[in-house]
Length: 287
Image (cartoon, rainbow, N blue to C red; front, side):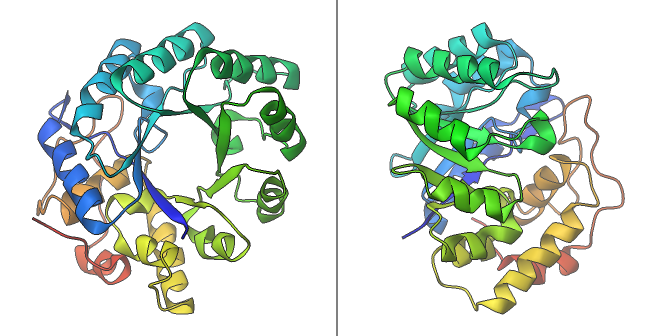
């Protein structure tokens, strides 16, 4: 059965991490039947976090994750020593799986990227999952490079592919023993049909339709249409602000969410109507 992992929002209120909201997110994840949670990824706004806060949240969040959920910790920093420190902190805290995007902003050679991931892989006892998101990192991880790194580093277990390129996704699926997760919500159904291990989809923070697709409980084409329409709406807004807004609206039950984004983000302006979104998400548990 394909897995669905929530790439969690990092909830804030009035500029401070909102532990109460995070606990409710974990309750929603557990009671809804998700397979795991991935904290401090791109939907979690990791790139805007102070390094000290990033490290602190790794220690803070892990104790709130229910035992039945797989625990993935985002350790992505463009600075290698910081990524290594976060990997060490994550394992010490109790995460057995860490996730890293390749170093971003600068133009890195394949050799530099291999060195970056290999250093992380050799420093951990658990499992490393690569994160391929060329729109954010500026570099696509070719399947040949991923396969080569996997052969050299036994701790590399899988990859989240957010390239949006199904041909590239299929090439990743051909790598023996590699877990391949789809990061683009609208491609989840097609990815599962060709053998994906599952999805790490941002709408999972508030949308059960995504979970139903992964678990084969959906209405086929109609559910895919819902996801495509939902992602079209989300694309109009700043990310991850829209995910935080919809999480607070549908999971926390707040009628007018405010002060939920830390600087430099802003609360979204002119949000979509709840009725417009409600028909697309298969309304989640609100307890």
